[in-house]
Image 1 (tube, helix red, strand yellow):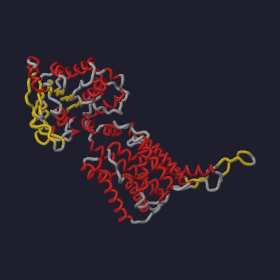
Image 2 (cartoon, one colour):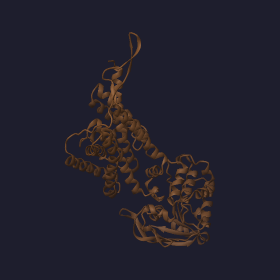
Image 3 (cartoon, helix red, strand yellow):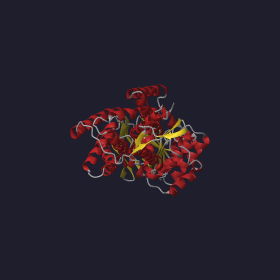
Image 4 (cartoon, chains in turn orange, green):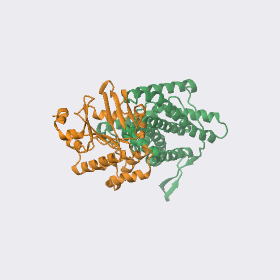
Length: 231
Length: 308
């Protein structure tokens, strides 16, 4: 269980998150919805320790991860797939995955499992990450995070700019991870994509969590979504 | 003597400059590439290497090879440890901010320089080379009886100078192997590519930074130890290698190791040849002019990756 308890965070003096609280249970896909600049990406960076907390705390299964140095957060079992993928572009596919494996000292069997999820990566192990197509790069970013064998997976707009077949492949992996008991926090702009996978949806506005609803309710009544992020 | 032997002699001198310069510049390039820190104090680490080598060689009696051998190992370790301490106490506290670290390393430069002046004094002191056999170099000349091998007077070098070139080649291969074949190399390259993502994947970035800063300083110190039997140790000797290293790193491309080595060979050789035939000042003028041209026409350097 990942729990954010009243966190305040921001860059320098610019506060972005205000008393944000959130819970993601194992085997659940929690989706963050909100307008641009609402603080979705900052929430993920705060969880990873990349943005310092001003107050509040972040708990993972009873461990206070917000007190750890940033490099120890992934070792607690949090995998992060950032917006724009941010692969180690000069390194090969295999080396990118190796860095993921080493974060929690996962064995070679983990690499095998991950490559079974993304068979296309297996064919491209020796290729440099920057030479992959956009969809393959997203696969690699996802695979790299899965190499941690995470308890919690943070995905920031994983389907941005991908073609439908790739979006479907990524979606299937997300659902598979959920079914294996991983707690998943997902940021996604496309509402239909959210509604098709999410279990619960948290609306975030000006750095505050305004409401958390089961996805069922949104599927039944689309006007709720429009109220929060309507154009 | 014809022109040919002169050029050969000048190239040999240039090759020594190139060898020492490439070690120093690779250290600077590594620190800039991974940490994005422009280390103005880099030349002082070079100087410290030479001064510590003198101090160690002086403390050990007996055959000069003993003291020099100890210095070759101990000086880089001492200087590397000093640099790690400087990183943890100064650079880390500035959060590796690119501008503030420049000012901080300028301060570091003066602190190291003045401490050396206070402790070691203003004299230039020699260290005896561990071996120093004179080697004459043959030349082929077309004479009355056709082609003949001759031994022109003055054309020669010493075994130590050749050893410096060899040592630099071996050390550079070592750095390349470290970067491309080891776990630490992979971690360094990941940190260089994206500091935040390195942390997200459990890489202790601050520890990597400290080690890289230490490694860069140790390479400069090693260059200082190698040069001291040829050049003598002096507390101001760090200025020239610093200037040349920056020239080399800018021409080669900031953060690119192959570019740095190639530019070091180019600048070192041309420095040697131009210094012999014209003047050392002209060599520096041309090198600086080349930097200007590179900055105008190819700002990322000859081998640098274009910044996105």
